[in-house]
Each structure stands twice: as structure tokens, then as C-alpha cells.
Length: 198
View 1 (cartoon, helix red, strand yellow):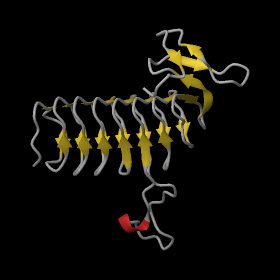
View 2 (spheres, one colour; view 1 turned 90 degrees about the vertical axis):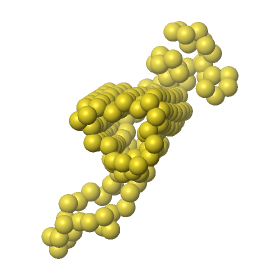
View 3 (tube, rainbow, N blue to C red; view 1 turned 30 degrees about the vertical axis):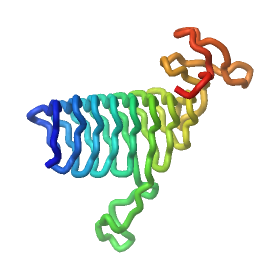
């Protein structure tokens, strides 16, 4: 069992002894964290969250209630994952083979998902296999993300489409006449795009 320093695990959570949990992280009621999952320091894993085996979650990540993070997902530092977000990992899902036999682990291929530093995924969004959400990217609630999201890009819809940009402070910045927003952010006053990567 990996040593767990200053980690809060609710008594109803099911956390594999093979999972690594960083200091200062909290895992709330009825969450399940599978073997070899790695959760960084200062994370909050909400109620009824499922973290599959070998999933990697960075530091200071907030995972809200009822999120499903399946095998093949990597989440970098400082990501916000809203309630009921679902990460998928199979491009060709089937329960059975052509002959009617139940599919096994050998009958499918994992398509990884990467969520980069500072990104935010709105409630009830679905992230399809093979997608990368860029640094500080923002996905609107209820979106189905079928393609990569660029750094600082704001997307929404089914399928998710570009609406504009998102400042690291969270302010949506709409495109104007087909051109990306440039100038001081109306919320925080910082220049956008950032002078140096945040």
C-alpha cells in the first residue's frame, strides 16, 4: 500500500491500496479509485466519482460529483471537471463479438484522452476518445467534444464548436467578425492572449 500523508478518504469511498494519493487530497463518499490510479496533491474527488485503473490526475484538480474517468485518461494540474462529466475510451463500443460472445479486454483498444493544465470541463459534458483539451481550454456544459480543443479555446454544443477564447481567469472572450479576441480581459484586466503562457 502506498503511503498516504494528510489524505482524507470518506469511510464509504472504495480506494484501492495500489492507488497513489498525494498529500492534502480529499476523496468523498461513495467514490471509487481503482488500482494504480495516481491522484496528485491538493485534489478534491467528489461524491460518487469513478477513477479507473491507471488514470493519472495532477495536482490541485477539482472533480465534481458523479464524474466517470475511465482508463486511458490523463488530467494535468489545476483542471476543473464539472458534475456528471464522462470521459469515454472506446471508439468502437460493443458488448459482444459477431459470434455473440462477450467482449474481453483483448477485443478493444484504448484511445487516450489528455486534459491539459488549467482547463475547465462544464457539467454533463462528454469527452470522446482520442481528444486533447488544451491548456486553459473551456468546454461548455452539456457539450459533446469530438475533436481537440486548442489552448485557451472556448467550445460548446453537440458536437462542440468554437465560440471564442477563455481567459485563465475564466472569462469567456467571444470572437469578433471571425477574429479571435485580443486586448485586456474585461474581467481581470490581463492581456489576452497572455504575453507568456500561463
